[in-house]
Amino acid sequence: MLGLMGLPGMQAHEQKTLSVILLDDGAVYGNITDPSFVQGNAMWFKMEDSTENSTMVARLDVDQDGVFNASIDFESEVMVEACDLDENGSLVDETCVVSSTYVFLGNASTGNYTYWIERTQNATTTVWNYTIYLHEDVHEEDGPSPGDCFGAGCEDNAAIVEEIGSDGISDEAVLQLLAVVAFIGIVFLSLSIRKDRLEDKGLASVHVNEEE
Image 1 (cartoon, rainbow, N blue to C red):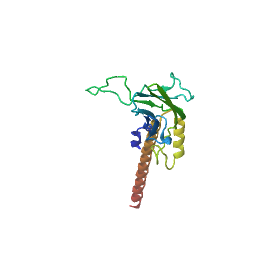
Image 2: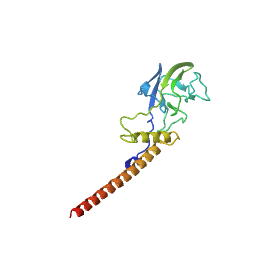
Image 3: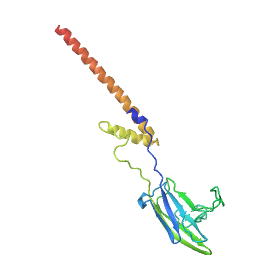
Image 4: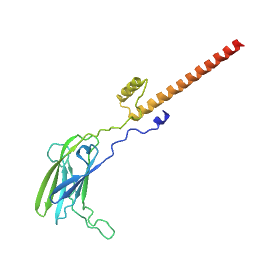
């Protein structure tokens, strides 16, 4: 029970990054299945079009209204396939960009998000439209978790958790409170058992003396 007090709170979702590879004929992506793309994840746009004089820009409809708005939605910098480096491995042009990343908030709205890839090659511009579905980040644990109730008194403990949780106290605080309550119960139970044993021992001594 004391060990429960030292346990950390529930772990947040580990961020995953969806790779969106930008080619000369469109965008392809993988490494994350659609149901696994959840709140808090990121989209990484990587320019891989080696066509001469080609550039790419990625735009994401953050507010899900179907229209790109530069003041609200995400827009990457102009991306190229490769940047020139000097002899020290530093960028010759510090504004040169080959990739861009957008991270969804942990409480971002779920649903379909439209993103546009604009490819410019010389004077020709092509725009591709895509969508990605953002799922809710649901935390599920296999098997029992710290704080799970077993045996007698479970209803009371569950009621305590529900009442405290409704006031906005963290799961970690609830676990610590339950651990303290359980520890106090163990102490009182131990004292009660010890008292009963001492009383039994005293009664046994009295019986022995009476027989003598």
